[in-house]
Structures are given as C-alpha cells and as structure tokens.
Length: 93
Image (cartoon, rainbow, N blue to C red):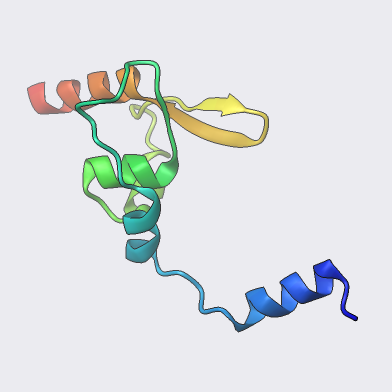
C-alpha cells in the first residue's frame, strides 16, 4: 500500500501544469462591486482585475510606484482599497 505522500506525488506528476490564463480564470473570479475596502486579494485576482497576464502582473508589482503588499506569514496579499486608489491615480495621470 502506498503512503499518502507518495500517492499524492504520483498524482501530481501525472497532471498537466496549469497555464497562466487557466489559473487566472479559476482563481481570479472576483466581483469588484461586492468587495469591501479591506478585502485582501491574491495575485491571480489582482491580475484579473487589472486585465493583465500573471507574468505582466509580476513585472508590474516590482515597480516602485505600485501598491505595497500586505504580508501574512509567507503569503502576499493586496488590499483592495489601496489597489483601487492606485488604479484611480493611474487614470488621472
């Protein structure tokens, strides 16, 4: 009988890696009209809101004028209120 770790590794090795657009479609679904200002968003959700590929989002987040993330342990999240303010500042520029 296989241990659960070996079984899980074998199952993951046979699955196809998920592409960027497929991952954004799965994880990026968010209704921005229902988001409270203090909501914390994942990378895929922010990329979907900005309508950019995940790779472009990772380049964008390295810019010094981009929103600073909120770190919770080793996780990076983005506060909706500060992201919304950054989007408005980009529109005004």
